[in-house]
Image 1 (tube, chains in turn brown, cyan):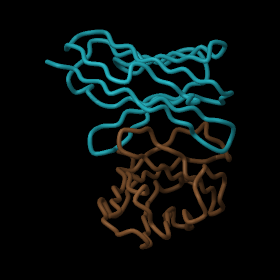
Image 2: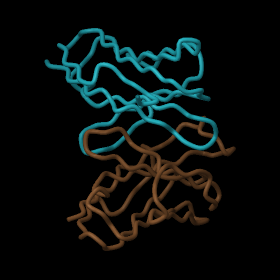
Image 3: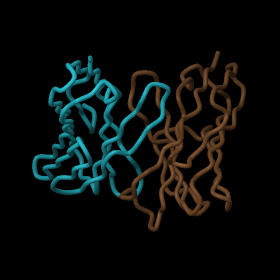
Image 4: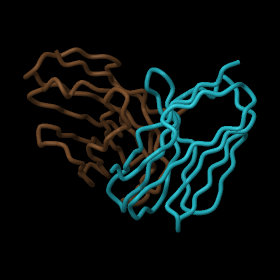
Length: 116
Length: 108
C-alpha cells in the first residue's frame, strides 16, 4: 500500500482551458515528482518539489506549474490546454532525506486527462 | 536515440517460463529503477539498484555499470506477472529518465 492518492481519476477538458490535478503524498515524504505519460510511452519527468520548493524541471513549458504544501499535498496546474496534453499524469513521493533521486519513489494511481 | 532503451518492447510467454527484460542506458546515473505498471496506470517500484544484484521473490535485477546495462529476470512466470515493466535511471539529483517499457504477457 503506497498511500499516495491522486484526484480526480479522470478528467475531460477542452482546448484552452486550465486544469488542476491533486496529489496527496505519504506522510513524512518531503519530495513529490510529477510525470506525464502519453499512451504507449514511458513517463516523462515534469518537475519535482522538495520541501515546497521546485527542485528540478523537465522539458515542459511554463504553462505547467506546481505547488507543494506543508501537509504533503501538491498540485499540478496546466494552463492553455492543448490536445497533446492528453495523457496520464502521475505523481510520486519519496522520503526525500536529501535532494536526490536515489530514494525509492511511491507512485499514485494517476489522473487520466483528455483534452478535446 | 533515447537515453534509456528497453528490449524487447513486447514479450509473450507461457506460464512457468524464465523471463528476461533488458535495459541499456547512455548517460551517467546514480541509480537504476525497475517499475511495474498494471493496466489502469498504477506504478509500483520493484527495485532500485546502483550495483550488483537484488532479488525479491521470483524477481531478480542485475546491473553492470561498466556496460551501462541492466536486466530484470522473472523465474517461474505466472499470468499475474503480466504488466508493463519500465526501466528508469536517476540522472544526478534532478530527474528520472524512463524507458518506453516492455509489455509482458504470460499465458496460462
